[in-house]
Structure formats: structure tokens, C-alpha cells
Length: 167
Image (cartoon, rainbow, N blue to C red):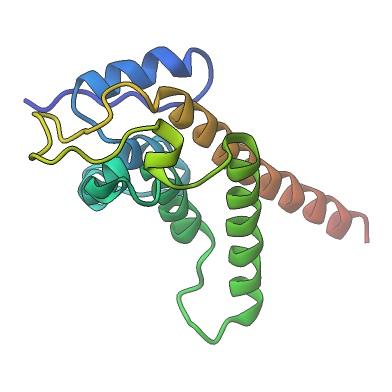
């Protein structure tokens, strides 16, 4: 039986992130899976999509938390047609807002710079993480940022509905 994933939402995100990490979930999975319900996505699908992106794609490159956030933003805001320029602009705004806020908070989006760890010369230890628990704070931060972006959208939609009802 697979370990149970606990979404990094609401209270006590740090302990949830530690429990998920101990169960084997990678940074990218922790972020993308935390928003499965918001996206109407199957948890198993998000677990599979996020697996290769942990530990900076196993090379200390782009942080898995950032990749997980981009998966969420893409699934939520990317249009089904590349011709939908208005929707593409919304996605670009959300993407840039996340990247700017994350980098401003943490100084980088590169895993090895964020964690201070270079890739080990050998294969990753069991669980697939080169960086053990060094990214718990990054997971918590990324989940807050994504949640804020989704909440911002929900509030804007609600305000738009209120304006339509008043017209």
C-alpha cells in the first residue's frame, strides 16, 4: 500500500511536508499534489507527473518546488488552445508572479543554490532525494505562494460576478 499524501495546505505545513518527505514524496510532487482538488486532477497522475522533477531534476537544477508550482499554474491557467492569447497572458502573469516572489524570498530558483548542496557523485539514496530535509521551508513557501495565486484568482472571479449582478 502506498503511503498517504497530506496536502501542504492550511495549518502545520512544515510537519506535513516532513511526513510527506519521509514517505518518499519529492518536492515537486508535494507542491503539485497539494492542489489536486483545486485542479480537479487525479492524485496518482500528479504523483507520476511530478516524480522526475525532485531534487532539481536529480541534478540540482530548477527547484522541484518551482517545477511543481509551474505544473499547478499550467494545469489551472494554460489554455487548451495556443491561439487563446488572453489566457496565455493570464498564465504568464501568474507564472511570473510566482517566480518573482519565490526568487525574491529565497534568492534563486536553482535547487543547488537554494539548498547549498551540489549533486552527489553517486546515485541518489533510497527515496530519490539528494537533499534530505533541506527543502522543507521551500516546500512550505511554495505552497503558500501557489495558494495565494489561486485565491487571488478566486477573489477576482467573485468580484467580477458581483459587478455583473449589479449591472
